[in-house]
Image 1 (cartoon, rainbow, N blue to C red):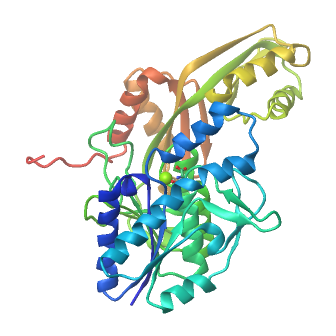
Image 2: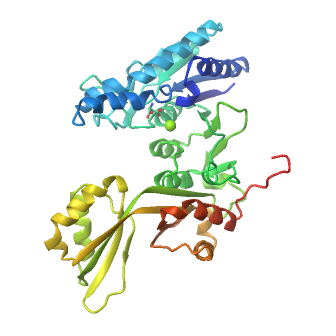
Image 3: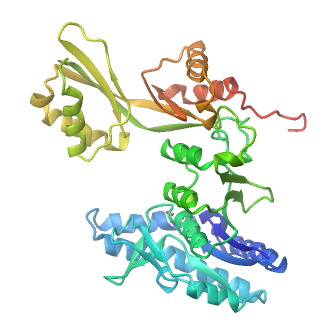
Amino acid sequence: MALIVQKYGGTSVADVDRIKIVANKVKNEIEKGNQVVVILSAMSGVTNSLVKFCNDITTFYDNREYDAVVATGEQVTIGLLAIALQNMGIKARSYAGWQVPIITDNAFGKARIKEIKPDNLLKSLENGEVPIIAGFQGIEIESGRVATLGRGGSDTSAVAVAAAINADCCDIFTDVEGVYTTDPRIVKVAKKLEKITFEEILEMASLGAKVLQTRSVELAMKYKVKLRVLSSFVDAPGTLICSEDEIVEKEVISGITYNKDEAKFTLVNIDDVPGVSANIFKVMSNAGINVDMIVQSVSSGTKTNMTFTVPDSEFEKAKKAIEANKDLLNYESFLFDRKVVKVSIVGIGMKSHSGVAETMFRALAEKNINIMAISTSEIKISVLIADEYTELALRVLHTAFGLDKEISEKE
Ligand code: ASP
Ligand code: MG
């Protein structure tokens, strides 16, 4: 007998028919003699429209009331799944976050889970019930108010519950078959990965791949939760997220990601003296903006150019900050380019292979794709390129690193 945590995302509970399918999947596990705890998202699109309702009144809302609104989506799905299971003769009950309880800090709108008390869930299981928990929400004890965990937070709810009740595994059901080498909508020969490490998934998520909420992966890594991503639409094994030593045959590169939320600034003819980079960072961080890639060009005499990237969603804020600090930064002029994309290759195999960067840069050069900036970490290399080349870059890199799926004649 295994204790299984299953999380179903918005598309898996999109309507009553999908919820009945989920109920059947739970029933199958129960009939195998397993115990199941379910975490649910809201129906797909519902959280977006709840967020929009708030913004339609004002963007300066009280985060506690925002949470009161956006937490309601999950309350609908948990009740409906409980009804569907009961209708099949299976004992089930729904739990809002506060009923578990899932206790959070007071960062309303993007709260962190502080503690989950497992007793109620364990009692439910002992009574032969399937506990169905609202993802994305908890309670802040001091104020007694509902708090949500940030968009995509039900992944984190699931992993945290799995850790709290010491579950054998945590299965994240979604509408794709697992984690892919790259975006399969762009690269037709993208492959589903059988396994990928926590480190790689974290890197991929921060680089723009929308797989799992980052916090959920951090928790799974910390508490050694066996985490899988799989589809609720097709019966296939999915992708296991695991530690490095569980992967026997390491590919050099596991995934290729891209992020279009990038904008590039170049400060022209700034002083080539110590402290200039520090000033740029100060100006940006005072404005609450994260600088990502930086390149300083070779100086001519006492002047130099400095190029850096910020999230494109912060473009206007960044531009204002640069303009407002002209005296401090002492540039002659500045340029910007919002049509850029960051393409990254990720793989723990990089630690032990040389020549990875060369392969990447050469593959791009052969297609005449110009690299505007580069940044690296132990397990990733990112380049900034013109966004019109996104698809081409993904395809050539996918081929260059031997990731293309063999297409059988039938396909
Ligand atoms: N329903 C929430 C959202 O859309 C939480 C989740 O689905 O993970 O962000
Ligand atoms: Mg999600």
